Structure formats: structure tokens, C-alpha cells
Image (cartoon, rainbow, N blue to C red):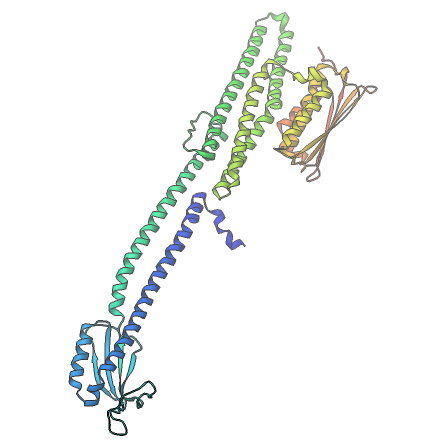
Length: 506
């Protein structure tokens, strides 16, 4: 089967040309072969018919000359016939003993057929009874039998050798005309196939180039729609995605810059205070740095899932475009779906960016508390898993979460969110479980996130920004975090947070 997969490395344009031209070339070859065969068969049939007729006619007209021995007149007749008909190569007259009496060969440069057509020269004697037995003239009646006829006596034979040269030359000229017409049709078909292939591959190449520019961070390139149908919809979706991503990027940069300017302004005002406030200035500097770190963590936790999803969808479009170039017709429909998904993701990303600076904690925490917020997040991931990762999520909780403070609730929510984001992005799991256990007696909140994915090497993955952010949050609250994982055996993240965080030392 591997020998039949040579076409898998072909581009979609090459495949389209091949599919279009294969039946055309087959028809062209069949037509050329049949035309040449029919011309040759026509020459052979015509030569055979003419040879038999000519041999029979000469045999019937040569009886008297052969019997009487007057061969000179017969030679002149045969010579004139041979010289006037270019399809005759040689005519021979043989006597009864098989000896050659006359042999006339054409003077034209012709090729003889390997066979000849022969006809016997017969001498017939007929008995005619002109009188009856009583001497009266005989009058035939219906009851009378036919007069006896002697068997024909063979006095010689005529052999005619034909030549296909002249007829083949005529048929070759006709065949050349037919071949030229067929070749012209083949060239026109090839030109049409090339135009059709270019009409499909050029927009696909442009779409792939646009996706590569977007993947490289260039969102401001102009991506025009140059064709219709599914490819045109793909180009339009890519252009809309580029605009949406560029707007989201600009909005986020503006908000971060505005927040940074506010923080820098606060820092500059604190620096202008007198020496008695130096301790306060040091604390403000620490708050500024902590606020920057908090903003970075918030951006990572809030927008990373959407950005990763948009990147995965873009990579999926590139993969599907490669499949479309290999002749997969179903890939075009999937490209359309992925493009629509990217558009929805970018709109969600834009809305999330607008809400990022305006609030420092999810609204769902204020509405539902930590238990309801985590449950709602898992339902959201379950709905997305039908189209993205295929991972299902379950939730288990114990305790009264209404006693949690604001800082502890939002930190716990962010920790769960980051852990689930890592499961979706890296674990390749099909099931994950989240457990929240609040022990009032021990005054602790335990968080456990487990999946059955591919696992990872804790030593090499500990430097990831997601894990670092989780560690920073846990340590800031005076808690403990532990990772248990091995390759192909899943991952378990266990976190213990005290309900009464330690107070900062003044």
C-alpha cells in the first residue's frame, strides 16, 4: 500500500491537475491508438478485397490467352494495370504445371505484402445437344434435365501481390490531422486544469501566509478576500480575526500602560515625602512591585486560556489547510468551523480585556462564593471540552465556604483556574477532578486537582510561569503546595491554605 501513497506529498494544485488530466490523457491515448489501428485495419481490409477481386477478374479474362498461348496481349494488359494502380505490387500468371508464364512488378518504390491472392484459370467444356434422337431440332421442356457439363480443367493460375504503401501514406496523412486535433484538445484541457488549480491554490497560499503572519504577532497586515465560496469565507474570517486580535492587543497594552503610569505616579509622589516617611515609601515600593506582579498574574490567569485556545485554533487551521492541499474535501468545512471559533474567542478575549483593569476579582465570586464560582468554571470547561480537548471534569466539596475571606477566596479560585488551565494545555487528559475541603476545626482549606493525563517531570517543568504563579500565591498566604506526577500516570496537585493568613511584619 505504501507504493500507492506517492501522491500524499503532492500539493493540492498538483493533485487537481492530475485528477483532471488523467481521464483526458487516457481518452487521448485510447483515441490515438484506436485511430491508428482502424486506419491500418481499413488498409488491410481494402487490400484484401481488391486483391481477391483483381485475381478473380484476371483469372476469368485470361482463360483464352493462356489456352491459346497468346501471352503478349495479356502481358500488356497486366503491365498497364500494375502501372496504373499503386496498390498492386506484382501480378504473376502461372501455367498448369506451376511454372511462371508472366510476372509484372511495379516500378514504383513500394513495399510488398508478405502474402498474395491467387485464383485458378479454369477451362470448361459444355456439351450442347442441338437435335433430338429422331433428327428434329431439340426443344427443351421443364422435364428435361440440364445438359451435362464437364468438370472445370485448371490450365493455370493468377497470383496478385498487393502493396500497402500508397494506402498507408494516405491514411497516415489523415491520422496526422486527427492526431493534431486530439493534441490541441489535450493542450486546451491541460491549460484549463492549470487555471482551475491556480484558482484554488493561490488563495490557499495567501490564507496560510496570513495565518503565519498572525502567528508571528503581525496583526496589522491587510488580508483581502480574493475569491468566493469556502476559501473566501476563510479569508474573511482570517481578516476579522487579525483585526480583533490587534484591537485586543492594543487595548491590553493601553490598560497596562495606564496602570503602570498610575503606579509610577504613586511611587513618584511617595519619593517626594520627607525622611520621616521613608519607611512608608519602602512599603509603597513593595506594594507597587506586588501590584505589578498581581497584574501579571491576573493577565496570565484571566486571558491565557483564551490566548492559548486562539493559538491552538490557528495551528489547527494550518494543519487543516495542509490536509486541504492533499485533497481532503472535509478539511475545508473544518477550516470554516475553526475560523468561526477563533472569531468567537477573539471577541471573548476583547471583552475580557475590557473587564480586566476595572475589577481585580471575578464577579462570580461575589455572586456565588468560592464553591459556586469553581462549580461554574468547571461547567464552562465541560462545555468547551466538547469542541476542544475532550476532557471531562468532576467536582467534590466539603464544608461551609461562606467563612472565607476575600483574599483567600480569590487566591483559591485563581489557583484552581491555573491548575485546570495546565490540565487543558499540557496534560492531554480525558478526565480531571477538583476537590475543595474546608476543615473548620483545623482552620485549613485543602485544594486537590487530579487528572489522568500524560504527566510530566516535576524537575524540568517547575520553572513554568503557571507553576511559579501558583507557588507565589500559596506562599503569600502561608500555605503549602505539593506536586505528584510521573510520565503517563497523571498528575495530582495538593494545596493546603490556612484560613487565618499570617500578618505582615512591620
